[in-house]
Length: 253
Image (cartoon, rainbow, N blue to C red; front, side, top):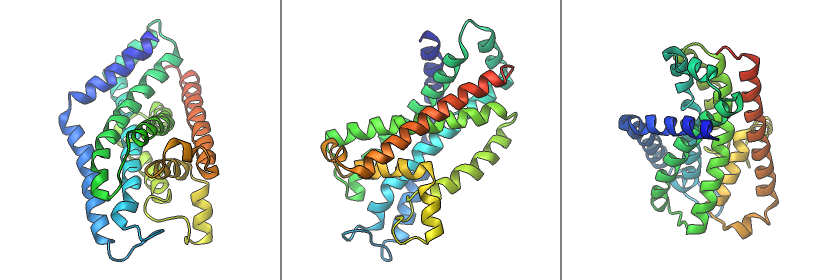
């Protein structure tokens, strides 16, 4: 537990010492949301007259979460280049502690950014109660764990930051585009709807979108939400297990 705490604390502290990184990670999705929301405002309605700014807001929060969680694991490659990772590997710290510490740190970084972005929810016309905020924070942590662990597993196998960026851009952008963040699954072409339902990010999107509008009692009676929750939990457990397996498989970093 000490090893997990030290590694997670180091990740968060490193991030907080880079205010430009924080500004950029928040400014990009904010501008993306405002420009796309304004651009599609007069040509999009969903459900009972939901405007695109409102529809797109949960999707942009999820995008912020995913990309913050994934790219926080770039520090793994930097640590290898600096020799820090090799020092951790020879220290009396288990490989599991290494994985959980780095994943927890990346998840907390993504979680913090997503919570800050929730302040813009009233601009989207989404009133949030304290209970909804608590629900969202818990779900953000769950989603962040799964995709940070995924980023960890891939980063462990990469030798350069440029290569990692290339791989993750090819993987994450399509996953987010067909997650239901930009358009609802209802009305999509049959093949596209099938691809969306095979996408783990789609179920993270269901969790986040429903939690913006309903309290916990309503959510727990929603079968679609419960299905998405079980899949997201399974995905997080699977990715952490894969990350641990990769570290044991290639212990020399």
